[in-house]
Image (cartoon, rainbow, N blue to C red; front, top):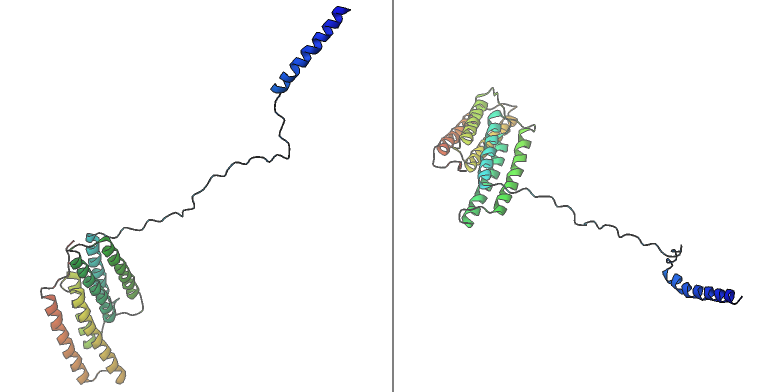
Length: 233
């Protein structure tokens, strides 16, 4: 009986000893519904907008090639009748102004064109290019099959100017001045005909012929002087 009591007391003591140890090694309690769940931080995206690349300005060689191409397009329009004398004069005036500005740029920078200079010239030539296309495709056309002597003389003068532009014998400035003179004559012819029922009197025809002869001399002189379109690239 004594042995049974001792055995029981030993069991109770051993249980009391092991109870704190089991409490220490027990797993942590499960998270309750009231505990806020942790959320992952969303990946950050760049707020910087995508940049578009700006086209590089044309090189000096491309600037010169562009000028020549514009002159060829104007010459073709004059020769085909798509450009009137007035339209040609206006286009050549703009080309002449661009050439003058380019010379100023070169002078200011010891014969060099900066990237900003080339970009500016490129923008101006783009604007002239659009105008060339617009003028060549509008309703204003030069008479390409005239039936009167005055009309035939006018067409011949236009073809000579166009040839001078195409060959480089006429600069943009020279072509501008010649086309302005042609435009003035054309306006005078139109006014004379409007005042006389669509016809020109003998005196008016003689006066127009004299004016065309003066322009003819100027065309010859301009094509045979020392001024040439720049073809240096």
